[in-house]
Amino acid sequence: MKKRLAILFLAILSFAGCSKITQLTDTITNPSARERYARDYNGDELLFGQWQTAYDAALSDSIEVGLPYIESGAFKQNTATAYSYVLKMKEGEIIEAAVELDSVGRRVFIDIYKISAATPKKVEESKMGQTAVSHSVDESGNYKVIIQPEIAASAHFNIVLSKSPLYGFPVAGKGNSAIQSFWGFERDGGKRKHEGVDIFAKKGTPVVAVSDGIISDTGDRGLGGKQVWERVDNFRYAIYYAHLNEINATPGMRVKKGDTLGFVGNTGNAKGGPPHLHFGIYKYGAVDPLPFIYTTKTPNATKLNGFSKQFKNVVLGIAGAAANLRQQPSTSSPTIGTIQKNEKATLLGEHGDWLHIRTSRGTQAFLHKSVAKAI
View (cartoon, helix red, strand yellow):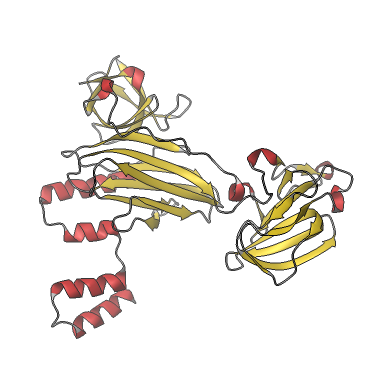
């Protein structure tokens, strides 16, 4: 459909200048920043081919990182590369990818893919001038972030990958530590599973809306006792707040994130027990609500001063006869090969005691600093 519209408008405006036609086409097709850059590039074709090849290789790389993850390094003017990371994500989390640069005006392109059995599907991409993107995960699984600087870029960088919850926390003044009963715990001697999380707080502590939405139902009934139901994200999710001591909402009410819906109690089958909020999320059925509200702190990135003094050179070797290459920056991570004594590798960045490298065979991996040496 987009192609047909583009052809039609181009025919109508054939008398217009090329720049106007390009602007019109972009309005219709909405190309990514990377696609616009590639289209408008008129420099060295060899460099462009290497740049594109590096991106294609990143699509098939399989190094994994846990979040949060920070990598520091330097883009080298004479080295075409693309950085790729596989992330294991859960529904209800937000992927956040950002690149900090010490050079003004340098362009960097960020793409996020959902990995499936078939071809990876792009789900997010940076716009022109952006150095950060985010993506709300609506399906648990593996995702890949690819980061690539413009051709011949030269700049020190911090790559910061992190995650945040889709929703706010449902009990005022509380956080992760107040969650003491989790999804899947056995109930009634194993007859049923816990379909939510329990958040403990003093009776009367405000229970607040985790997102803007509409109150679809309230009542005092069943296992949940005094309860409030909220519909959010265009009715995609139903949010369940249960065991309330008091209800402070009515059906049909529009609420904003942070509005008080009720107060922590122990009604329903929690009677006689410690006051807490049972918090649940329903889609087609119940889903684990923890990723939707659990916060993960991202440490501060290091100052943009380039590689450590030990590894000023971009070319590395190893100190011993051979060394293991890891899929993740951890000694407990699976090995994805070895590097031999006389084999050279390209240093891409540093993460703590680990080096992110590309071998002479084109494979990206992690190598421990203790076994590496500068060449």
